Image (cartoon, rainbow, N blue to C red; front, side):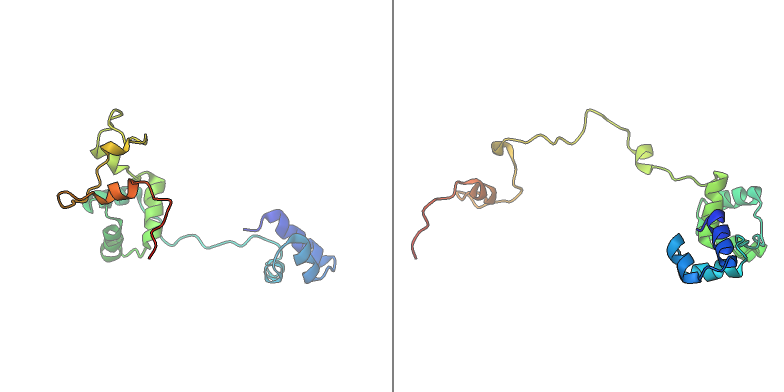
Length: 156
């Protein structure tokens, strides 16, 4: 977004007779952005206010009725109340009102046990389990990988 000060500078420089290309280079804006600012007379654009202002009580009631499913809430608003609202806009309203807040489900379901953590300390090789079954009398794959490599290669 281009700040109001920068917009004013673009408009004043253009009124003083500076070419658009120089303004765009000096203020590090595209030439199209400079043209658009000049066409708007240096003022910030205003967007129309939203046609619908959602009632917070209605949103809370729908949130409970729909068990927190925002997509279903949007459908009900469209079908029953005649309010066409996009999903992203609805979720933004819900977050702003504090109705829908992200919940860390793992923390609610699994109690934290500080004694039971994954260990990152190395385990001696004799205690490792390969998880691969090997026929009786044959070394496991892990044991073969751990065996020292012979410095002399056999001749073929």
